[in-house]
Image (tube, rainbow, N blue to C red):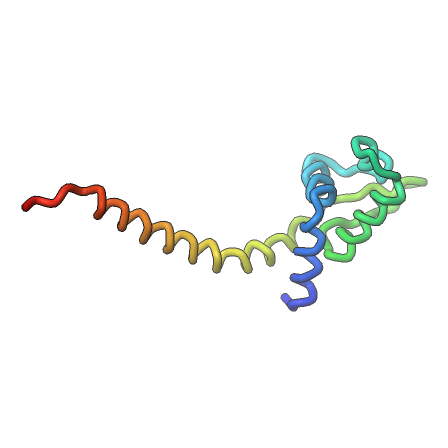
Length: 111
């Protein structure tokens, strides 16, 4: 995975509206109008969010008569998860050391 591709995925995930759209598409495919319904923004603004998600490879659109339903493609999220895994390992180690330290200071010494 290239840095440019990973950057586009993280950029797409940086907006709460786009993350919410992905959550909703995880349940079912939806049209732009269906996706725009719960927001207090224009359909055009939602379309711009969808374009960012599409450019990141997180959604695809198919032609279905006059509609173009959006579909989640979660595969690129694996690249983001792989990148984050290194930091998860870092935090697990750090929190493990903190836990060990806290146990040592809470254990009464036998003098």
